[in-house]
View 1 (cartoon, one colour):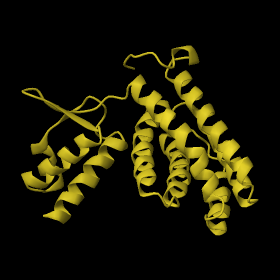
View 2 (cartoon, one colour; view 1 turned 30 degrees about the vertical axis):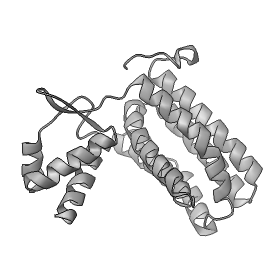
View 3 (cartoon, helix red, strand yellow; view 1 turned 120 degrees about the vertical axis):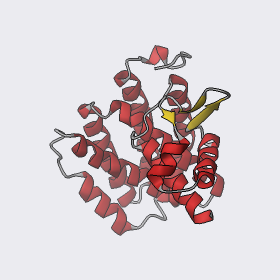
View 4 (cartoon, one colour; view 1 turned 135 degrees about the vertical axis):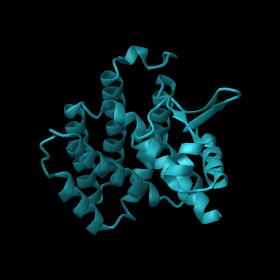
Length: 222
């Protein structure tokens, strides 16, 4: 049962993160059971776990729904990234594999046409690989778990801004600069570039979503 529950959890979560189950959509446990060819228990347990991660929410007598992407969520995510990411990236300078850094840098320099959904998602996947790869090098279990949740929710946010090709390209170039500093072993520069990257990403995300910096702490739904 444990393997079936894990399978149901990972599969449903990926459907949420890649937009197959979009924000505010109804979650039908019966349909998921049929789709995943699982019994009720694994799917029900998966939904409960996803609820604890704020990916779904259950309303009494109304049903279960995929949580929305809100301004509060974006604000809190970037606040967390800004607090953790620069120092975590700095620490990774001494522990990251040079081969991985060089390989990822090479793949990030490939010019994609950015004409299709798949092109943009390919670059975004490299973004995720960089951040999750660095987070995995952190020897603090609690920070690793926090960043895992943060980057999972970040994927949902980026689905709302993926059509902004300029933002994707700008982020790609910043990642190359961060990797250059890491390859050179320059921890101070790596930390500074990482902080700038999170700030730029935050500002561009809010701009893409139709909000400016003076609206950054506005409590409203997108």
